Image (tube, rainbow, N blue to C red; front, side):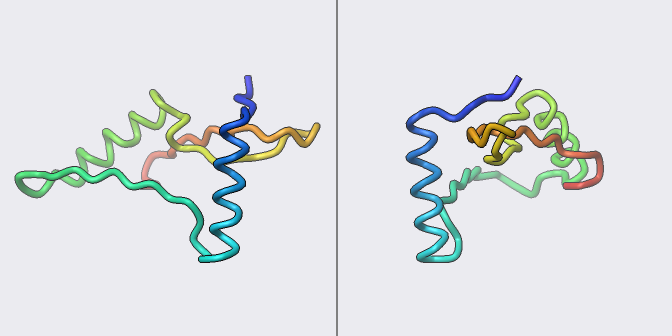
Length: 82
């Protein structure tokens, strides 16, 4: 049940690798939400935990299988880790 990486995934990983070597940070993405006030931190953490189970691909990282093929390893957020 692994999601093996495709051609575009290889390109993105190569770009990330190159940027890590040059800048030390790599290729990153950011989502910005403009809020009208302060969010309830407890509720936000709870919703993010729920999202990690509903959309595990958002909380993953590249890994290699035993056959050395790269795939996306899903990482579930554990309760209290956010």
